[in-house]
Image 1 (cartoon, rainbow, N blue to C red):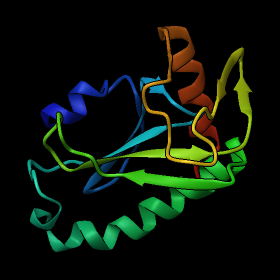
Image 2: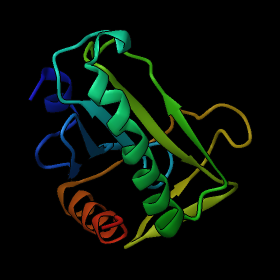
Image 3: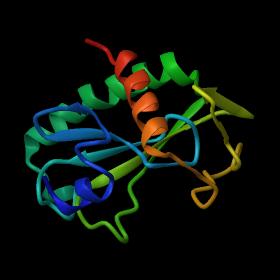
Length: 143
């Protein structure tokens, strides 16, 4: 585990582990189903990952997109590799849609649609909501 994974709540936010990547539920939800895709390594530059991490990335992103399409029915998906505050390789996965989506009383409007995601307008999840949303997304995960 690296510091970036820990900051985003690992292991409590864990949705799926792969050999080189973890998929975490993003604690602050700019859109319903927002995730963090984090490299398990200590690399702080995308180009610093092992070659096998790039190969596995195809499978990981296909799984993410299938799960979120089934759960959220997104219209677009954004992968934002910002890495300004949290240095280890990771990206924010933001499913995009017009209007709002809800699950178990958690309702999130895509405030930025159709422009860039409004990362400053989020729904913060409490422990119960986090676990309900995490379990729901795990249930949509392929394989």
